[in-house]
Length: 349
Image (cartoon, rainbow, N blue to C red; front, side, top):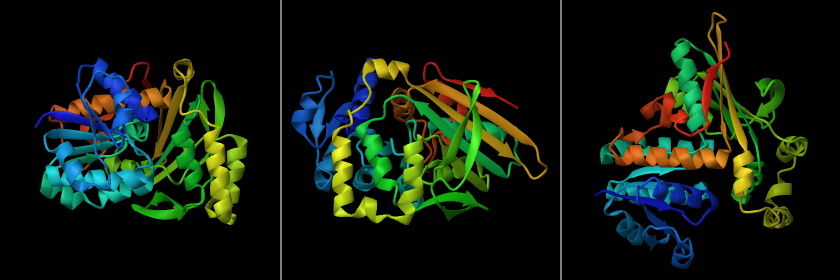
């Protein structure tokens, strides 16, 4: 029971992960729903097809696997059937999701996971690895922290899948963590200024980010707020969507969204990946008013995701597991975020 499986290897990030895993010598099985597309990858690794609608096929795929990495979005559709198969076969589960709802689904299955001896770790890419690391780092510096703010800023080309997930979620309710509970919060409800590259960047509430779940799990800090930097047109969309959700959910709105996505490239080119950058800012405070602050800078989020996913795939296969729902920094510590080349974590105060 020693094979590694990457499901969704034909997607944009899935290909980046598969290529890097093979270069690192992990020799994964590349899996997905379409055998022809898998064979066309021309990556030096075995390929196998299995439909998400066929539990027996998924079980055959995983029967001799020690760990599965799910890189196939949308995760709201792929997460459950693949996690079900992992529970049936005793396979540890990783994925690249990054939405709070997806993490809550996994967390809700913690008892099942522990009984099966299976670890489930969603968000092993940019989804939460850097923010989880910053959260755990700050909690270590301020053990009685009461409030935590996590923000991210990225530059570079967005992929079709990422934009599709964001547009689909605009009309959905979001949450933040207050007194240890998740409470409804509107997108863009608050804004902050954070330091980034020698300037102040405005960030607004992002109520869908999985950080509100993962940081609570990793640190126990009762209040967690999440923010992101977005272009002005998207800030307008964040304000309009809750008041007019039919713009997104109506047939006409869905057709407009599909037409927009068709015009978006599948993902960044190699040159755009080289040029892209990411920044995660964290600020924690306690009831005495003590403040600690840190910033993590790194490469393009898609490249970051590939490196951290392969790193965590390798560590999980090597036996670094704790059965149940787990977060990256909870199991591996904050330094796991620094395994990606070009990543730096530094304290601001």
